[in-house]
Every structure is written in C-alpha cells, then in structure tokens.
Image (cartoon, rainbow, N blue to C red; front, side, top):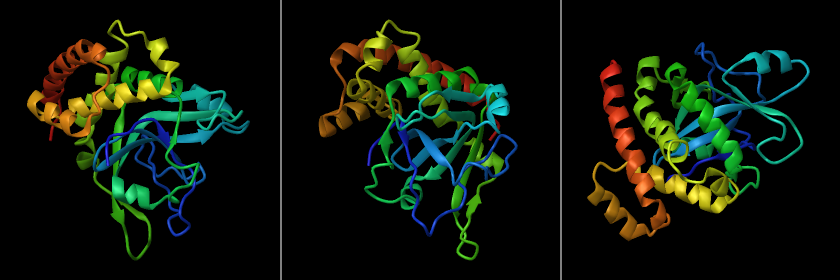
Length: 248
C-alpha cells in the first residue's frame, strides 16, 4: 500500500450498508444514501475522507448556504449532476476496514477524480482548517453490525496528520511559483507530485526519505525539489506552532 489522494468510492458490499460519516455536530449523516466518501488522502494505515452528496431542489438552498460545502456542476465521476463535498468534518477510518466495505475491482470504487476537483477542495479545507472537526471510526460492532466511533478527543489526535497534508499542499501549490494550471491540466503529473510530497512529509529525516526513494523510485521530477523543500520548511514551522495549541 502507498499514499493516494483524490479518490471517490460508491459501490458498497451488501453486508456493510451502515453510514460512515459524521457532521459537525457529531451526528451520523444518514441522508446521503450510504455516503460516498471523497478521499483527501490515504496513508499506509488510515483513510481520511469527506462526505459527498447530490444536490437536489429539496436541499439546494441549505447546501449553498453552508460555507463548508464545495459545489461542482459535474459530479466526481464526470457526470452532468451537481454535487457538494462538505469540508466541515474529516472522517478517519482504518484503511483495511475501509477497503473491506467496498466492492473490489469495481469501476466506481477507487475512482480517480480530477486535479481541478481536488485543488478546489483542498483550498477550502485550508481556508477553514481551524474550524474543522474530526471523527474517527473504531471498528464494526459484531452484534449490531454498525460502526463504533472513537471519542472526540481521540479523533482530534488526527489533526496534526491532516495539517501536514492540507497546509503542506497549500505551501507547495498556492504559495510557490509552481504553475498550478500546468499541473492541473495533467492529472498523472499532478497526482504524482502531490503523493510524492505527502510521502516526503511523513518521514522524520531526509535520510529516511532518501532510502524510501531509492527503494520505490517514486520521487517526482527533480525540478520540483526546491519547491518541496521550501514547503516542508514552512510546514515544520507551522506544525510546531500547532503542537503547542493542541491539548492532548
């Protein structure tokens, strides 16, 4: 397994049809079919995702009034249908558990969305980062066959990992001289750079990362090396400030 970003899932295994997302009031979201998660990113062991829903006449006014909703005229599969991605809550789940919920090798699962979708969502997450809440699933209850959720305090421990990804993305692609449009028009190149950067920030030392690169040969073009190093420098400074603000 490796880090991935910007994926969407739709078709669930029938034995697992419970809801998998919470809202900002810590309530289970039960109005979006059985939740179509938009993946901010996969780590090696966790999935960090947002709730997506279709926009209808019934929910349009309320949906558009919510500043945390990112609205698209075409859905994440490229269909001519309006959807909203809610950025108020980042849901977290064990990666193996998450993948077990969905039909394997289904074309509508692990579907790569466009860089333009991903970029707009990441911009919104950055803008409202300090207002985001976190909800982490623990396991499936054997008796009820429903998800059991961790406490609010436990869930908040994911904030630093999310900071690395969300603010790191901003430093790399918004606050540098990288041509964003050039990357956004080239999906393979875009997601290669983004996931390479996410791989980079998870390592504690340059030596650890260099060893990973030699082993996996996944480093993006050397021309972005300066941008990556500058983004990581800013990120580390921000991370230290955030650590002092979080009460464990």
